[in-house]
Length: 292
Ligand code: AMP
Ligand code: MG
Image (cartoon, rainbow, N blue to C red; front, side, top):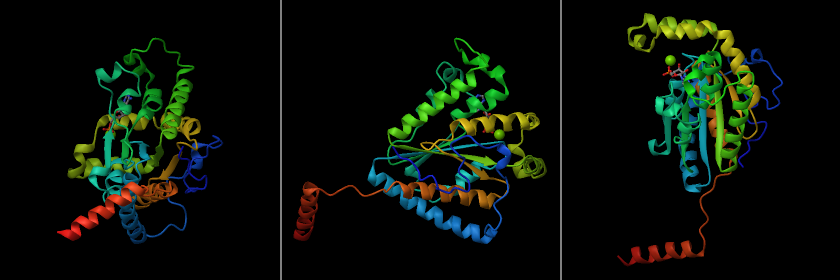
């Protein structure tokens, strides 16, 4: 199964042994990070590289890539996805945003709606929110469980059980050739407040604002506790989490793009082998074209 080097972008890789506190992760870029112009230049290069790598991923035909994005409101999930994949062939990736489950979705187990959106080999699938909402928003609001038609709910055990299910699901994907990369865009409470105020102040951002976002913001500490336990229980070598500082948007986008590029390079992608039959086909093609 595709396993990433443990030192792959170790600055942001969430340790696999669960030995950390969520406060260990900074929302600010590391000291000495490049300037805005430097980051923009690097991002432009990475965006181009990602396109080439996706085409090679397709030609190689063995792997799919699933990138999962989770974050508090206004952390920049949408704009990060838009920028990082802006150079990739539109046929090579698909984004799906997961909102509150529909009644049909609630008639199934929580992986059902995700399973249908998984990328096929050669493609990049992007989850804007994901199955992880089941241990984040649902954990902060356990009353949502009542709508899930579960046969029995023991709130002392359910989160551990869900983590176990998620680990098994992702390990299964990895074993079958899907590279799972998960990004937590770590925005600070202060910066979120600034961005939410901008949504009210700037007319072209008004449409994004919902009063309900402030209710979630009021539960900040509960969310951080849920994120911490999610990161501990589900950052594993077959499906690592990356904690991306999100208070500086340029840094965030470049960091995500860099990790995507490094991870794809790690796979040792190659063009399919030209066996004797295929070589013969090429020779025959050349012969016919020359005869024209
Ligand atoms: P947005 O991403 O701003 O469009 O909002 C989508 C909303 O759907 C967020 O408030 C999520 O927390 C919520 N959501 C996503 N998945 C679930 C889920 N499984 N159960 C309940 N709410 C969810
Ligand atoms: Mg929202």
